[in-house]
Length: 394
Image (cartoon, rainbow, N blue to C red):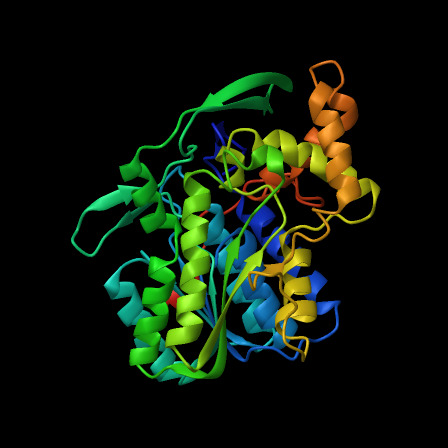
């Protein structure tokens, strides 16, 4: 059938199989064009189908030559409904990995569940023996706890409401938005979903199963951002979860002698998660324009390759900030960039937003996540939507 983008809120409810394939292929070609990284040889990527997780899997496989197991939670096509973008991305990744003779298998299921952990350990034992890298890149909206209770994360402030500017990306108009504070229970639930509990559970289970290689590395991803987003992010409910993530990194390194845990603070990018956060899309639009003008803009794949090549696996101990975090947001947080955005923020309105915000760039990145607006793809052609992920067919 002919597949067109259909949006609802901050998500696209369709995905284009050919576009997703070409998007993944482009990322693979970028990594293959860069110097080889002396990094992991057996990697487990939790949350491997989109964004930073997908870019991590590509960097592991095509940058380091690693065998990879990816954990995803995606839907195949059914009738008139396309598969999710993550499903098509994973199918593309496995096809490209096979063409290069790289081991790549995928588990589709709830990464929080004991069943998926057990299935993963069984696969590692059978096929790899052990892993030397675990990337934890989940951005889930909810989690079913071990007692069967399902809890959800919220995007709210902590303590008091927050009012600031935001943008309606469809109408390109600026308005004010007020974000209400989370309850104590909502903060606790958000920590359960977005914090480091499950990351540490994965490490503990892998350790107990004896499938963590000596001197293994594990990394989880976070964000800090500028002061103008702190009330909704760093100091909000999500920020509380990210603090827990950092605390768990310290605990993992201390409690499991064979593994070192890092938090990588990444740059603001268009993802399904960031698109949902009030204030942030306007900030990203301004940031894109400023960084592109300076030649400093990076997408997910450029960011993750740089993390591998210059930080995690450079041959030296990664440079970190005073809290032990790797700062991949170093270019975003350059004083001259942040000053420019701060000055613009004070007077940005409907009349000048077109001049100072890269809204077209935001939309390009948004639709490319779902396989649309990819150069060279003919979107007027019928395409087969029922694409198999080879390892799930075994």
